[in-house]
Image (cartoon, rainbow, N blue to C red):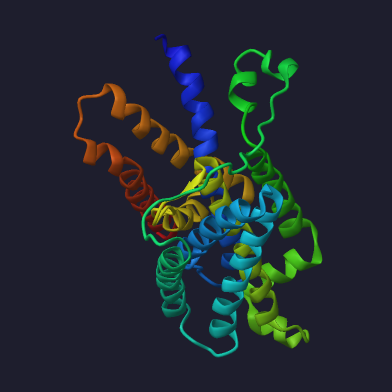
Length: 300
């Protein structure tokens, strides 16, 4: 296989793989701009993954499955936000509690509804439609890379654009950033910072619900702990992307490429499987170290 024949499917798969990272990070960006580090992203992805696939199987509709999965994720994010913002609980404790709740809740419901805590397989589960336009596929290189993905991949790109417009071109975006940088000034203007932070948390519930749906509906099944650290990696993506939507898009692609490389490496490289599977997380640690060094140099 030539380098070109190898690189095109590699990049194509990287774009698909990066989608959950991208969606979760965009939601996390909204809470970060509001002055809150949302470490509940991992649990919210898991909630979205579980409920989207079981609702899609129960209703026979992808739209209803994704919609109901998102609503459940938004509900859990609202609980997380209410306890944190209005009951004044520590955000790190409530975030960790949300992650633990997601893991326990999905396991309990899986056992009581389906009699297993393992993999859930569903017959006749609708598949995500892909954008296949023959004329676009004919574009050299770009056609094979950018087209043929499922609809949620393209929705994630649209969400990046919408997020940029909301953050930098709307009053809500200015106020959200003001909440994160100077909440006292917001209060002096008669605005309630907690309300903007809550909206940011609910947006993260929406995007994490979509991220979870991408994981399970692509696979056609629910696997326990299918989020597999993606929420934690999304936090790194936020900072690696400079806390901007398009920066996050680029950073998410880096991690998608790392995971895609690890998947390809399992087939043709004589490297221990454990190391290959750990490669995306090694990239995460390396990215954190690089960001720390850059930040330290800027402060100096």
